[in-house]
Picture 1 (cartoon, rainbow, N blue to C red):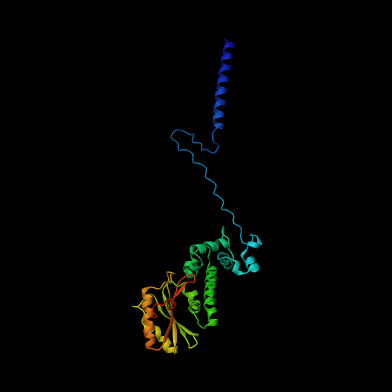
Picture 2 (tube, rainbow, N blue to C red):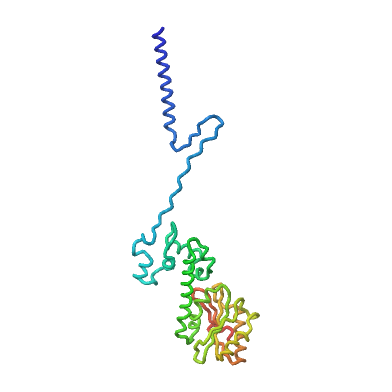
Length: 286
């Protein structure tokens, strides 16, 4: 009986050992990343381990870029004409911010304002509100844009004689194409068609009911100018003359004849270097 009992106990131990091995094998087969939800009945499942935050994509600084790709080196080697707008703005910025070098920062700012034209129209507060633009960077960008406008307006004055509509457009288009409101200005000319003065007459809506010929012609009377060119802009960017533009031109021609002041032309400035000459189109000069 003892022998029989020992054999029975040995068989039971073998069965128990096999049962334990099955349990261990099942646990090992589980996904090591899966949370262990085992626990007493009614207990809350274990919380999954928090994920590690993804590392931001690496972006080299300007100094870490190859020399032939750096904006300043490219400018020295090839000249500013060969740099794109983002590279030129990056030179003004000098440095970027964490995770964004100067070129990427310049690209983002240009994109935010829909290109260089939009950037040229923005004010200090709006530009300074952009992430990464300090007071110094904002002032440098605005100062550079203003210098560009002034240079563009000064260049034609070196040959201030107006011989065609393009000459007059060159004198004012750089500035007026960026204005958010309509402006009407008068160029006063002498007997040799040299520009002697420029006067802003209206800011706002320019139409036949708002524009008074006497106000437009008054500067010519004061300066004893024998002829004038009237220029106004279309903020929409389309320089196509409207019926109101033609009516204003016709009124100015008639009033000028009474005062012995010749209206040489009426130009409408759009965007992208486009303009219209009502004299060339024969509108209002009949």
